Length: 198
Ligand SMILES: CC(C)(COP(=O)(O)OP(=O)(O)OC[C@H]1O[C@@H](n2cnc3c(N)ncnc32)[C@H](O)[C@@H]1O)[C@@H](O)C(=O)NCCC(=O)NCCS
Ligand SMILES: Nc1ncnc2c1ncn2[C@@H]1O[C@H](COP(=O)(O)OP(=O)(O)OP(=O)(O)O)[C@@H](O)[C@H]1O
Image (cartoon, rainbow, N blue to C red; front, side):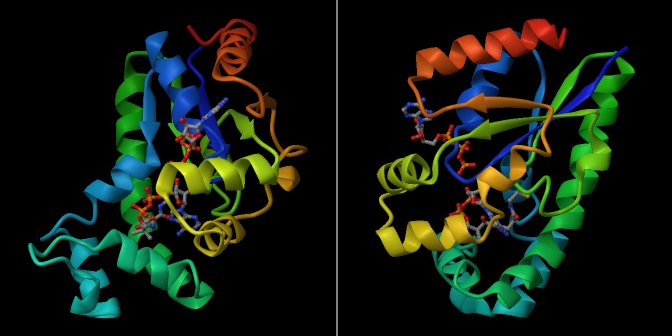
């Protein structure tokens, strides 16, 4: 029987690194971050609502979202973040489920890569949860290096999510990604085998 796995973690914990390894094994991954970008393209319903709610200051000259300007607002104001979530999340969920149903028709195991799986209470959508875990110091360092954020900007984003350590007990499998990418690859391969995902 095909199963749906929820892949989660925190910002910059290594979900994309893990999902790339899963894809190399031909296991389909549906990425909430990618869908969240598609549903806010100009002309889409969520885009129109964002402009109505946040004004035209969060747009670039070509009319697309200025993601860093919008990020600066929502990661420093919980109420504004909730407003954005209410606009974007339903469209993301709808698109993810439609893609999942497509894969399940062909009886394939499928991975839903959802950063906010626990925060948005979406665990009922998946059969098992796989958590990518890192210590907060490692998370902070990798986030600063990857995005070129200041420490303040990086911490604001980390604090917008539940602490990773609180997600450990709620998950069925943990990939500890504090070590090297090679070590992580071995752990992911082990999960693929023990969960019979291929
Ligand atoms: C605020 C936005 C424009 C910033 O864009 P930016 O390109 O800088 O970041 P990106 O979208 O690549 O997200 C990076 C990471 O930030 C974290 N994150 C994003 N949105 C949120 C949020 N609303 N709450 C908590 N963490 C979030 C996730 O871990 C995500 O993987 C963008 O993140 C957004 O539209 N967020 C709302 C939609 C959302 O919740 N997406 C997350 C998955 S559905
Ligand atoms: N084991 C590792 N060792 C060193 N660097 C790593 C390791 N795993 C991931 N990284 C780096 O850390 C950063 C974050 O990893 P990745 O993009 O996979 O995280 P993510 O959880 O998908 O992030 P987000 O959800 O915020 O997009 C990247 O720059 C990545 O190359």
